Image (cartoon, rainbow, N blue to C red; front, side, top):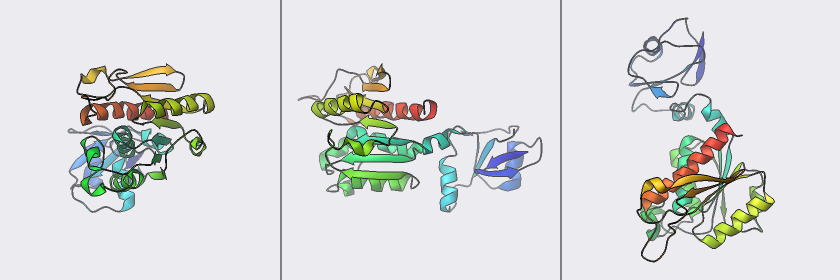
Length: 265
């Protein structure tokens, strides 16, 4: 019988159990993950099951690191995500959180576009650090993702995205609109819907303040076009953008992109 042990296809004896695999291949491991789930009791093993054996604090090579990064995925999910190409337009509160989530889950290629630099007022909701202040957001996000998951193929465009330069996103699967200003949201969304009908478009509307988290939803508008948010609470004087609801909306968008890559492509 063949199973995957730390992502390596390995011949094992019939009727072997998870604990027997552990005892034979890495007896001193601290964590045993079977098909994406950490187990606390012994389980029977089937053909092509995936077992990951982890020793905490162990030094790892790059191949071993990648194998462990995918250990908690449902089997076969990682390979689908690794083929995905997602463009994130805007790297503020939404875009930076989306990029980090998609990098953590293993989307293979991220195309990141923004023209701005990191400033102190960004740190209340955006995925940057004090030592990122003054950097272009594209560079800061590239650096931070590389520290999380060095196996992501990242392309960055330090520019203001408009309809004249949208052609650089022609080969992506999904376009995520993550702008702050309604004018640019509408302009780019309309362009994609008219001129890039083969692309999935995920846009946003309404995430300001500290209202009920549960009114932020994912809504399908038409085929391949979705909007995430509460559709009401935009930022305005006296009602700013705050980390919790911005991150909730961003992760609605990231989760939707994940579902599309796994189920629809």
